[in-house]
Image (cartoon, rainbow, N blue to C red; front, side, top):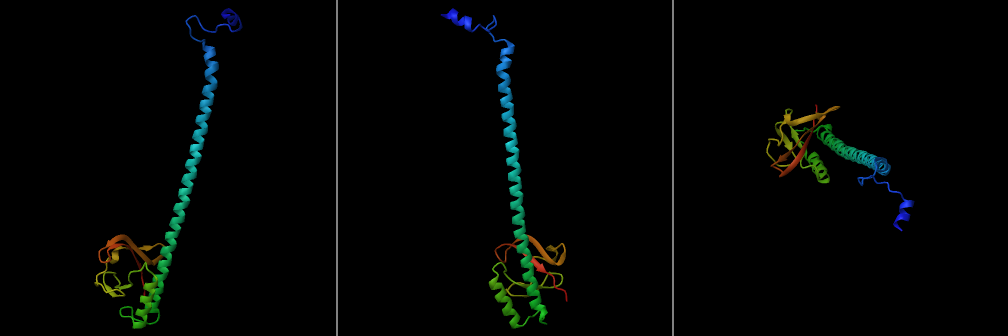
Length: 178
């Protein structure tokens, strides 16, 4: 019986028992091609996923930055309103009248992100008047503020810890010219 199968399937083994090189190539070539194609597909999918995640992160960062910018700009609009309230009605910013003080306190009550409205000297190193009882020395000196590009009257300082308040603050200023 063994001899019958030998007739149908002649031995392809070499005398040493190893398969001939051409047969090895026939079996390994498709395996190598499929492996190379699989690696190429995986690398392409990885690159596409990486680009997609990077693009989504960029869009999220841009959206978050736009929210921060919008909040800062509305805050500066509020500061400008306060400046107009202090000086626009002819009041002295160093000693506003009681009506102006009440208006400012109501304004602060409706804007929880504001702790106080200070009127400072031109150099920014002395508090002339404030809605909050505090020292005449500001938490941040006048040279710690940076004007915004495009509007030098709007300035902000670095985020620093304010011991007087007990937390970190981003201090903002609106320069008022008379």
